[in-house]
Image (cartoon, rainbow, N blue to C red; front, side):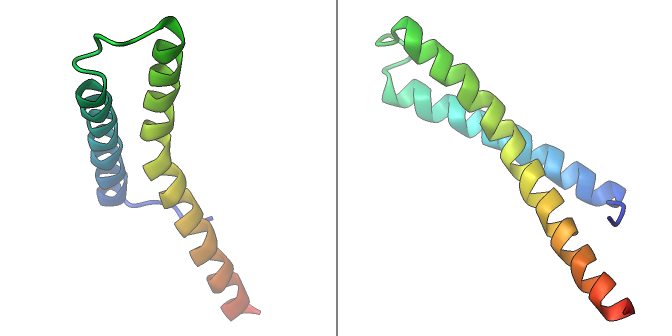
Amino acid sequence: MAKRSEGVKRIVLVLSILSVIGWILWIAIDSDGFSRFQPVHWLIFVCGLIIAYLIPQLICKSTYWIQDGFKKDKET
């Protein structure tokens, strides 16, 4: 698989952080500042943080994986 450039790594990191911030803001607004949270909601919140962080990275990795497949087809 192709190696990511430093610029792409930085963009993915920024998008991951913005995605986490967006998740926190959305949950905070939706739950009136976390005041309506039950214990199970905290579990969902933490799992959502992890998923929000990983989604941009998974999109980037899958894009490079697909792009690498086209390069291998071109070589053969």
